[in-house]
Image 1 (cartoon, rainbow, N blue to C red):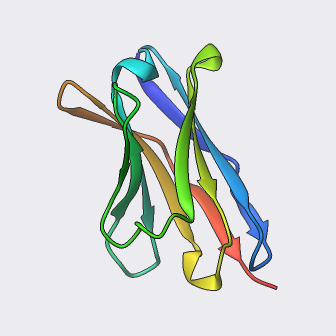
Image 2: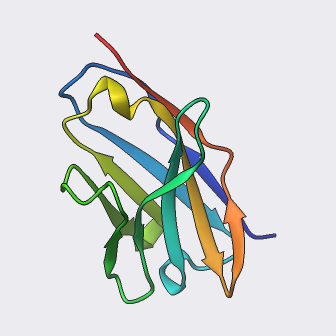
Length: 116
């Protein structure tokens, strides 16, 4: 069974950094596009950053400022989302999603709260 489990969220102070994890099972994450989305309460889910099978990093609209990036941990079939210089406006649920030959496999989400 193909699945991804996203984790690592929590409460963080403004200006700090946080790393979220997306652990894949049932498929090889490095062979597929893996994306991170976020959803602010009351708003639609939007893509933040992704990494494709060629290890190209994709920064989506609204997230090209360089604060967020992604990396792979191939040894443990995991993709990481690096959130830097966080602001309260980054408070959201962050979702990992793998695009496996057109099929989207979603994690359940990891809540990040940025507050002092």
